[in-house]
Every structure is written in C-alpha cells, then in structure tokens.
Image 1 (tube, rainbow, N blue to C red):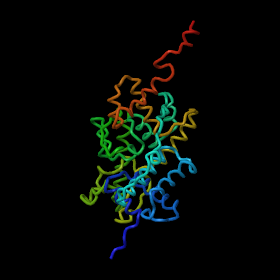
Image 2 (tube, one colour):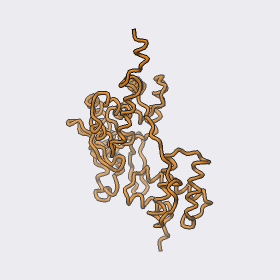
Image 3 (cartoon, rainbow, N blue to C red):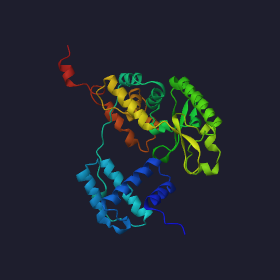
Image 4 (cartoon, rainbow, N blue to C red):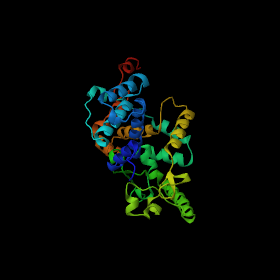
Length: 324
C-alpha cells in the first residue's frame, strides 16, 4: 500500500492540474508551509477558520507585509482549503483582502534607457534591450524558445504569459542581427551538448510524455540558455535551464546605479517605459494593451497618468508668469 501523499505534494499536484505557473505553485507551497509552522505544525484539517484570520492578521501587524503579499497569502490559503482539502472557508472579506491603491510606475526617459543599456554588455544587454523594445516581462523574455521568434515577420510569440495567455508582440528591427547572432550561439551550444549526450530542456506540462524526444529538438531550446547544465532527477536527462532572472536583475540594478540615474528602476521599468514611450509616439491605448498582454484596458490606462505628469500635457501657470 502506497503512503498517503504529503500536504505540500497535494498542493503542488492541484496547482499543476489547474496549469498554474511554476511561480504560483512555489508561492502557494511557501505560504502553506508558513501557515503550518505558524500554528505549531498542526495539520490544516485540524484548524478552524479563526486560524486563517490569526495568521493573516500576524502577517499584517507583526511581519508588516505589503497588501499584495497579504493577498497572495490569502489566495494560497483559500486554495488550500477549497481545492486541496475540499472545505469551504467562512472568513470575512476584510480579513482576506486588503485593497491596494494604484501606484504610478517608475518610467525612464529615452535618454535614461540608453544610459542604462550602455552600462550593460553581452547577453544581458541584449535581453534588457529586448525587454524595452517589446514590453515583455522579465520571465517572458528569458523563457523564449527558438521557435517563438519569427525574424522574417519580425514577430515574437509569448507562450503562457500572465494569466496563461499567448500573445504576439513586435520584434524590433534594430535587434534582428543581434538576435540572429544569439540564435547561432545557442545552436552551437546545443550541438555541443547533444554530441556529449545532453541537449535536453524542460517541456511545458505533459508535452514531454506526448513527444519524448521533443525536449532535445532544436526548436524547443531556450533562446538564452544558462551557462551550466543540470541533471533532472526523475529522468536522468542532462538539461540546460534558461538564463536565471536574478542574474539580469542584479546586472540592471548595477547598471542603473553606475549610470547615475536617481530612480528606483528595475527590469520591469523597461516594460513601463516601453508603454509610456509608445503613448508619447501617438499609438492608441488598445494597441498598447494588446502588446502588453493586459486583460483589461483599465490596467493599461495607468500609463496615461504617467504621460500627463509635469509639463507634457499641461503648461504650468508659473511658466506664463515668468515668460519673457
């Protein structure tokens, strides 16, 4: 008789059944683990609704987490009880959710973008330029596979973006040559890996069982492969992951500091700058919504607030007062 699956294994299995992203799965497992530890390693089945309230209250008062972090923990616990344990939760909404006020994003000027990119080199500079030139999220850019690029049509297909949606965005003409060179380098690395008995990559969902050899095929390889290989435990395959996000995050943070720009900019700032600069160039909000992959145009509208700050849309009366 097989042993009963552990609680975290159940959480992971339920997450994968619903095609949650790996990051969501890991976040939910993290919060379930913290919840169990907070209550002295008691099993959630033995805890009542008041245990959820006390945990979330401690996050807000003692840990001082942000509203978005609090809401993520709340979602994880609702998922645990409703989808994994099959038990309804009766907790007041005010304890579960904290309303988050909309924040105006940090945006770089075109000159500031250029200064930051000039502080980067090699693959990291190419990835950062691609993020700015396409509006991709960081992981959307790093998770690109060779087959997702169409250099002739200058299109990029984003697979399973936020909300598990696919979309097509532009491929900057100015990056065509650099991306072609990156593809050639990735191909040479893949050929060496195959010659050494490796050359595998992780495949989405159950596609690896449907097409066992696809993980070694060239179209499925990462556009930005990692420098090191690893051995996947369950199959023994020697694989490469894509370039890790922390490597680029660290490089961009250093580049912003070295450029002397006094803004709290990150990799995601390139996405904000992409949208704002398109608005400045006169593109309509619906087009930008499609390129960014927003499900609602209300999300995209935040960039109109950025655009209207300062003297871009409204002339200050002080300017008229002191005008010669």
